[in-house]
Length: 126
Image 1 (spheres, helix red, strand yellow):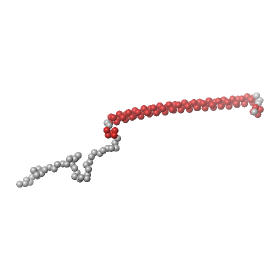
Image 2 (cartoon, helix red, strand yellow; image 1 turned 135 degrees about the vertical axis):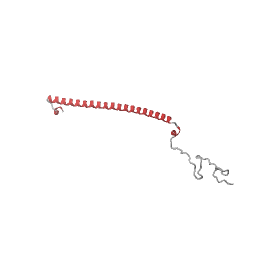
Image 3 (cartoon, rainbow, N blue to C red; image 1 turned 45 degrees about the horizontal axis):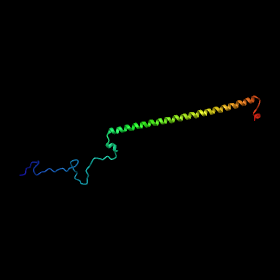
Image 4 (cartoon, rainbow, N blue to C red; image 1 turned 30 degrees about the vertical axis):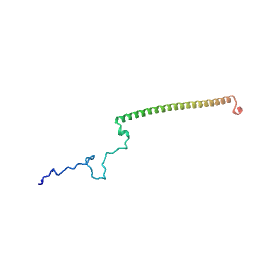
């Protein structure tokens, strides 16, 4: 006698599920199983190092950059100071030279005035 009630019977056997990552297979042999994406474009430090280590490295780099900027600024300030001193010296030398020329010119004018006063002229003196 065959029973007409549905349910597990001694003839029905559960089929084993093929082992896979998701517990099932597609059954299509040309389809490969999907795996997690490999991020090969990320830098090695991002993949392996801890966040704290990376932050420490960033802080060190920032400190070095700040120190370099300070040294560069000091060097530029020294260069600017030397340049200003040189320009000031040139300006003073030029002023002295112009004052000497004016003094000589005024001296020549005064001598010419004295000669004219003494009754001599340029034609007589030359």
